[in-house]
Length: 181
Image (cartoon, rainbow, N blue to C red; front, side, top):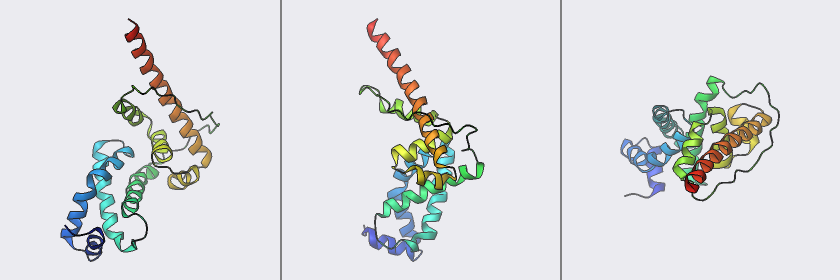
């Protein structure tokens, strides 16, 4: 197998075999990222394909500075978010600032349950939550990406956390009462 720099250079030269190899190396990891920002499995598959088309079209802009994987992740996130920007689903009628609370999570809560709770959030909350908590974007960056105000970003994050807190507390209460019986 060739090195990553060689593979990138081959992709810059439109080498189809190199593009296929790059796809095989990174598609599973990038698909997981697309799932976080998509409403369905099918949409995530579409976003992955569109993202790779963008990567191959813009790979000449990557100058071997910084992380290539990070560069690709940003393209995948932007590709996934583009569909939502077009749908204009982010606005809130009331941007009152909610108290931003941390969620207390017991260690015995399965990660699969937490991930399913995140996937069940309304898309505007889920995407702000994923960008802020999971991928480390600032509210300013989120506002620019989603074309919303920073206040809306903060409000959506607070609402996402509140919804997750309620689901976690319900789960914990059910499990605690089952253990006491």
